[in-house]
Image: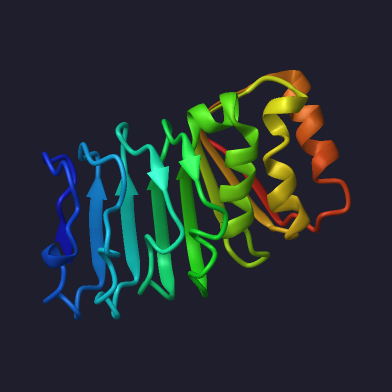
Length: 185
């Protein structure tokens, strides 16, 4: 287990983790890096099962960034200020247990980006937690259509503002989806 959260890592380099093949849990949250680095920093972490990354400075996620990460029990991504996302970036992680996403700004200003992220991590048996959202109408709920298309059954919303209109729009999005649980913290 390696917790490097809340440090001053401006860049992530693949050599940081090249000798840590037995590492099972890695926390890189809240460091000032803006992207995950190249070549892929997680390539040799074949035993990794829990990964947390991102923070206020994370701006871009590219296809191949998570190369080497094939299955996770838990994925946590803080991407409140994400401005670029290549579809498929998170899609190769399977099986995928619990997913927690913080996507404040993408939900407000770039619903196409937020939709692409949700499409990549939504599976019926994968519980999805969404944090730090402002849902105030039909447009802000649109990214959740991607999760609904994948028939996701477990939603948790944490630290979220949801207007009455957004609740109705969310329920319309979920029409016909076999949801087991919706939790709001």
